[in-house]
Amino acid sequence: MGILIGMVVTLGCVLGGFMAMGGHIEVLVQPWEVVIICGAALGTFLVANPMKTVKDTGKAMLEAFKQAVPKEKDYLEVLGVLHSLMRELRTKSRSEVEAHIDNPNESAIFQAFPLVLKDHDLTNFICDYCRIIIIGNARPHEIEALMDEEIHTIKHDKLKSYHALVAVGDGFPAIGIVAAVLGVVKAMGALDQSPEILGGLIGAALVGTFLGIFMSYCVVGPIAAKIKIVREKRNRLYIIVKQTLLAYMNGALPQVAIEFGRKTISAYDRPSIDAVEQSTMNAGGEKKAA
Image 1 (cartoon, rainbow, N blue to C red):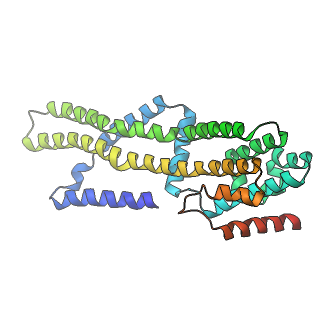
Image 2: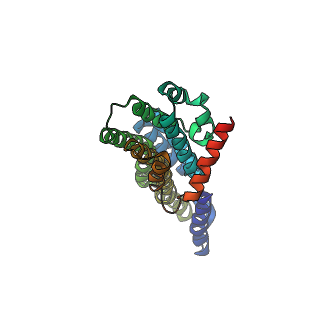
Image 3: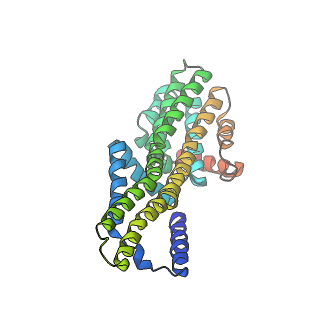
């Protein structure tokens, strides 16, 4: 919603200001300039990026439009599933815990937290490191180094779409100049025409430059920035898992360990201690009832 409101404000101010200065809006309607600029940008985007990145860019743009950042419920579910798993690690046998992490889709623990289970990458991350804890041979500082490396890799992969869009946005002004040059070439073929016709052709050519700059700084650039914000906030979920499990490996009780994870959440989004306790108690009660 924020992106749509921003686009309306931007277009309203740009076009409204142009019309207020006496400009005629129909002059800016140059569909073939749009075809040249957007088509060239799409083509170079496809050339520069593997298909996996192209598909992920579409997904990332959808996340940006939906403002799909983690909310309090997401944080509570991550802390809740970690708390349940750590209790299992403390009180149950290895085979009983492995049943949860080897097949999380069938696990009563993960089914109690559908938002976590829906995120396959995060679920696999949690299960992988719980499995390492069960093995029991790795030391906490070694696990921390491994987690840091994996989180860095995940962040790099998730931001590929951002970097791809930034590259396209940086190229839009130059592509706009290409469209403008083509328009001038067309205008040069009409030098024998009246000044009115020649002026219209030159004006149409200049629209290409306008569109290139506008698309770069008012459309693609802001959307790319929004994608980066959303993806980086989602990446914080992995930091929560890391700090919580490391605290548990260093001897903290499950209820204390999730406080380590809670403290890594931004103060603007961090759920209260009471909310976390209530969430974990409810999850425990549901599990016992099941």
